[in-house]
Every structure is written in C-alpha cells, then in structure tokens.
Length: 292
Ligand SMILES: [Zn+2]
Image (cartoon, rainbow, N blue to C red; front, side):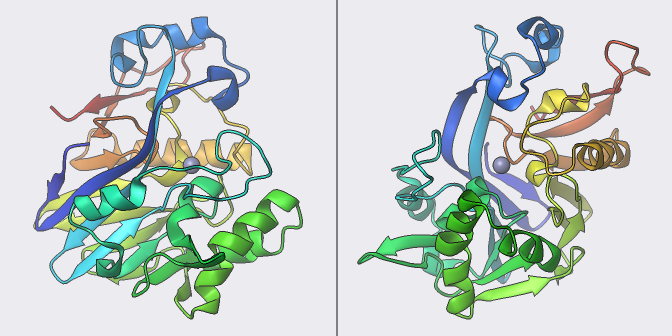
C-alpha cells in the first residue's frame, strides 16, 4: 500500500509477507470456477493470472500528531508453531523494514491487536537471549478484554503457545491494557466492535479533518467476501462472522470511508461500492474498488 493521508493522520503498511494463498486453505468449499466469476473486479490486485488469491500479512502504522500506533503485529520471527506451515519458525526482515520506514520499535506508543490470532500478535515479542521480550518496549498494548478472556482460557496447544510467547510477556512487563471493544484511544482513533471471526474482534477507526478510514482486521480476509458469503476455517463463529461482514459492508458502502483490508494485497486501500441487488448465485451485493 502507498502511504495514505487521512486528514492529519498518515497510515503506512509494513508488509511481512505477500503473495498467493491456496484457495483450499482459505475457502475450502469454494471451487476455482466460483472464484473466476469475480475476475473482472478482483484481477489483477487480488486474483492473479493463474487464478490464485493474493493476500498480505501486514501491519499498519498510524501516525497522528502526538501519537504513533501500530495495528496488528503479524507472525513474528522464531515462533514455534508446532511445525505447522505456514507460520512455523518464520524469518523475515519485518523489524528492519519497520525501522527503515522511519518507525523504530522504541518510537511506537500504542500497539493495537484487532484479535489474538497467530498472524496478529507475533511481533508483540522478539527473542532476546532465549527469552521473549516485548518488541515495542514503550508501547501500551491494547487487547479487547473479551478477546483476552476467551483465548487465555483455551486449552489447545496452539493457542497456549501463542498466548505464552506473544501475549503473556507483554502482560508480565506491565505493558498490556485490557479494553472494551469500543475503546477510544484519541478523538481521531478508536476501536469498533466487529465480533464473529473471534469473540472479541475489533476493527480500527480513524477520522481527521473530515476524512475517515477503517482498518478491517479479519472480519474479511479477502475482498471477494464482499460479494460472496464465503467463510474461512479460521472464523470462531461462522454465522456471526458473516452477519458482521454484511453489517460492515452496509455501513461503509458508497460512503466516504477508506477501507484498509488487513489481509488485502497491495494496493490494500479502497472503497466498498454497492453492486446491484445480488442474486441466487451471488447473494451479496458489494464490490471493492481500489483507490487510484
Ligand atoms: Zn489474520
């Protein structure tokens, strides 16, 4: 994504990883033919010539006068994810890229995690002499209370690993703040509840000098979900996630709000536009139009 101005706010994407995602991994019940019906508006940014979905894992840095925040901290390096691809023991230059973009970790005031999944909390910590330490040593880390309560009481190995290496060290350092799902960080920056993908999932709203933007988090994983009711295996509550997605599209369609898709491939930012009334094959009625 090209850096974006929202009034006095500047938003930059720091990409950890980008490229094709296997269709069967993201939408197991969808065939390539079903996806191809949307080529006219998805290609080339979100669907490549070979019919593959394009996605990113990225963090957004938000600069307001007086406050620097980062939204979602990707997968992180060196994390043991039980040997399971694609997130196990990753090594990327994310932290160097963040610094090179002008945002050294010490300069971040606030970390916002839209939810506590593996690809949104990873860089909360980094390995230092065999110990997980907060990557952003000065930052308040905002977790929705409901989200924290849900995942910290789960007992499966995957979740326990993620909490132990990417959330607990932040709490232990006294840097975590459990907040309500509509928490206001400033007059220009606040959380918007969008539960379903996970119980305490939030989106992030920005407003400045008459300009508006919203960061989706994972209420959508790909723009095609504006036009299709497709769900991913990663949604905690499929029906709730779908309802939240539809309400989100209703709320922002044909409006002035720039939508930044957390997993949307470059150029990432655009508008939701209404597209007819839909039909039996394509029940929902929106499209994504990228900013020029
Ligand atoms: Zn995600």
